[in-house]
Length: 211
Length: 245
Figure (cartoon, rainbow over the protein chains, first blue to last red):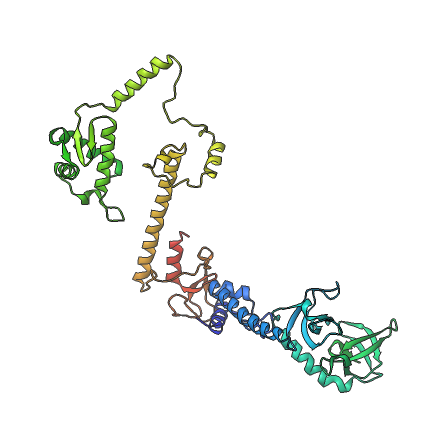
């Protein structure tokens, strides 16, 4: 048992032998050392020291990869906003767009959190690199892909509701398009006017359901 | 035979032959003792370093004889002084002196101590603040002046007894496993392995033994050692014995 694959296979067989059931999957397999299976559970089933060292090695490789991406301020680098206003501070998202700032040095970054759908524009010095959560980069890719696919269907006048609160309904007052400030990058988005209060807000397409 | 018994034997032999053979050089005197007793170095055993215990016991016996004034040493030469002062004589002399000095005032003959070691709480506190407790070396002057010496020696004895028992259990378990065809002496048990939480199970699926690599078939009785893996029943039993479960 040397590789993570071998350890996982053994953990699966031990779990099956003990409980008669397959080892459950608890997270997305991407960016996870054991294909989304609970690490604590694997540590309990097989050589815990070996599991710990493999997790550390996995994180080291991932950290180095993310560090390289951050040094170049690559698009899709996972970052955490560590400075700025209360609203911005703590956002854990991806760099969606980087451009020269209106004033000062460094770069201005558009950071988007694909899980909470929070976003902000920050200076690069206000961010630090982080490790992506399991499946987070997969969600990011899926968000790009789904937005691209759905864009032709989200046209002005169509009725929508919010996925996170389906009671909240409204209609589109713009066609789906990418944020013009991001120079063709980012996700397709629309402006929605909500029925209950008449207010307008902007959302990316994966946040909404077409009615 | 304990060290003390061996030492007493040597002392006795010294008292019998030294008046006749001394003065003599250290090596010859030691040989004479062995010849007189009809024993060899092997009978007294050896330290892990390979040094014979007999030489050390001789030195201790000589120290005692020097303390009572029965003999003296000069370099490597031992001499018999001829004046025998027994322990009882010394005690009597001490008592007379004390009587002269203190009259009827009660004097303490044991090692004086600031602590009342008959009080359990005091003892617990003192032990808690003595990091070397249980590691007494009787010949060490620092230990000799410690009020906890006797308790410390008892504790050391208990620890050594426990270690001995654990070693015996381990050897027994290794032998049982060895008879079953498993050499566990070279198996590296991971630090994470929770042998004390080992559970016996009836395998509900096929897996393999983390120690021997043999398959464990469905329905087979085996053990799961948390944070290590599955092991064959014989191996699990051996590890449980080793940890006194």
